[in-house]
Image (cartoon, rainbow, N blue to C red; front, top):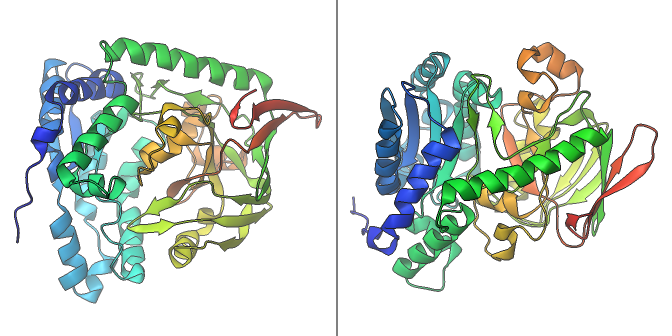
Length: 417
């Protein structure tokens, strides 16, 4: 096994520490005495060390980190028995669920090579993902139901950097990706915590306006798109910082440029085309085109990665229905960067998007008090998956449809109207 070269010198150490501080103070708002569970690629160790330091400075109880490694992940696909791909570490996720039940916060560092599994058998990848999704469900419910404060941030893993910037030496690619992450995460500013406070205020204004309008649906029109997304009964828009059920205000995604809510699982009609590629489990799925009837995708195709897309749609009954609709201006900093990150955390913040699968219970009025049956009755979707893909551009218009059928401009040519 080869030892990967060390490119940490290509990453600005001052900004990296600021990112660790922002992850704790803005992303999690970690509370004194609160435990923290971290997952991260082993390449992200320098960032994890900063996060851990600032977690303990904030009074953390105990910080526990689980690391992944690209070579050991590949070993399973290259050497594992066939039966291996229907297994998952349920004991680990049961332990995580117990930690969250006892009040621990959750932080995920993203950064693995998005194309890591691109050369592996798609059927094995799909089986492994399904087994993992089933095993992870007890822990994931604490996150999707927003029971706890949680956050995702990113580190410029060299394999990811080389994918984003293939035409430069890997050391320069790491530096470029690091700078892009720092800019999108607002840690290139003198006071990142203050910058996030201002940004969260702007997102809160957008959410408040949409909540005041009480639209029954959104109508998207553009090249290859004529889509009406009905909104769930009692839906609520959110963006930026939100209050988890444990009372902690956190920013789940760093970066974030979106305001989002829950569609009605039975009330999506029409057709829509993707405006950016979707990177999913090692496969790039491009030029997605789907048609909805009564909320369900009844036709789907893609010019690249279609086989994987169709396997995703067959994960379970809810996989062909929507769990989220999000609005992002085309002029967002991530869009303006012109970079395709091959990472949904970033790419979804460059464009309006929809998500297949599981909805967020917090996107309902009084969502914290609603049961799963009540959420379903109001139009919320349930699934093992939650996969965002981009449908917005500077050629897409969006109207809000009121209960009486009248329309209000929401976005014109990708910008807030």
